[in-house]
Figure 1 (cartoon, rainbow, N blue to C red):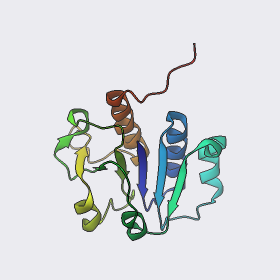
Figure 2: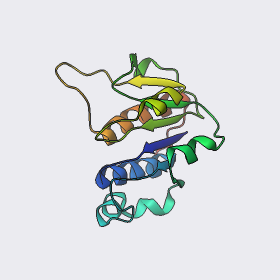
Figure 3: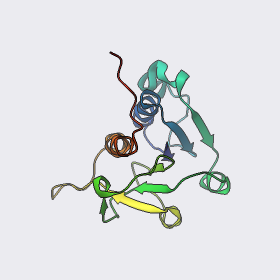
Figure 4: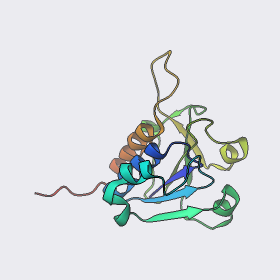
Length: 153
């Protein structure tokens, strides 16, 4: 399983998702351009020393990412979906895609996803922080597939 970040805007969120992926043993793909300098001090602070153990791949663009053959389904977490994430049947090779904090993903990326899922929210709420949403969906995906790390005794 992998977490895929599409053109993130906020370094603290990116760092948090890097830390999340490293702690859960999930690879992370970052599709550029980012809305910040990737070696930003805030990004390093949020990722802390976890970035050292992260399976991390940078992609120059959506086209560069999409042109590489990748295993598994591309599952987009979006407010424009109707299928709740907790009812979706995840697979261990799925790639969970989150969009930009400011704009989500463009229509071409939306259309390229194999599946689209949503976190149901109480009205009038519109969305969650992208890092929190990624953690919720990734946690459920790993729970369903038996991929959660084994805690130390």
